[in-house]
Image (cartoon, rainbow, N blue to C red):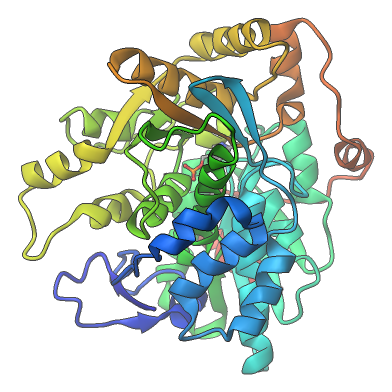
Length: 451
Ligand SMILES: *Cc1c(COP(=O)(O)O)cnc(C)c1O
């Protein structure tokens, strides 16, 4: 796989997957983007319903990475990274929920974090280095926990998580701050946007770069996005396993979005040949991308705090990548580019009030099915999209977190208690361990160089 930077129109500096994985960001401040997506064979799609999730994931990963990771190794990586299910729950004949929250931290980011950790670990075994890799991660709540679990005890790698003080749930904070060993947590006196900015600045800081081997496990890293395409294929396989599957119906995904990494996973799947006709980019009131999709300017602004806090993003970091999927050569005009994107993706945004109403609506209408606030935002996006369409479609909502992770909101809304998975109960008993720092690069720098 060769990747170019989204800031390098000429594509004159291409890198391998290994380089993109370890560098995270190109020096020109763009994002790494695969130059070419091989289309998967028709026979793969014809037989997909007979494959397991791991087999599907392997076929997809192998098509992208076979030049750099031998098949036997890739199979091991996948078997270890994709070792929990992503079942498709049926709400009704045209609404399905793809549950991506059965991993160790009960959120979809477990897929990306585990795959990234396993591939990095393999490359490090192949070409050992004396220098420790230092992974910096900004988290609005869920990324940090997933990355901490994914990288826990991986030799040669140290992880520093930055999270905004007072802006993550108690449970999320426990997941971030109780892991220990090679994982440390910094509690930043600022917002998620501050955390994200500090990580970006650290990357571009020549001094730090010279002294530490930095990498990022945020969804700016392409290795987080590749595994996030696997489950789109798996949703299709599960639909095909249904007795009533109708191949002529459109396939629509609704993706609750913040930094748009999960949505880019869907675009990878589409480019590899998965018949996705439409994607609904559903956000909370941090609606930078829906505004753009409706013809407005792309205008980052400070994020607002909402109930779906993992999507409280004011400057979505994968936006340049989203555009790059639709960019032509020579480059299209801004208007043409937007037109191309609008063929496949539409935006929608919802308030907290609408979100809790949706949680209640789903609970009442679909026999007690319980959604987390993020998933509920996806549900609303799908419902509104399908209501506008003339034809029936298969609509799949990506359920990004387990409802128990947002237990207060969910219980207040449905008026019943939510069953807490055992892994979460255990973590609530552990002691928080985090270092408080101000929201500026100098503070981060001196912390990193100290230790
Ligand atoms: C991260 C996250 C999202 C948003 O995903 P992006 O890839 O940033 O768009 C949505 N829901 C939950 C629960 C998350 O953790």
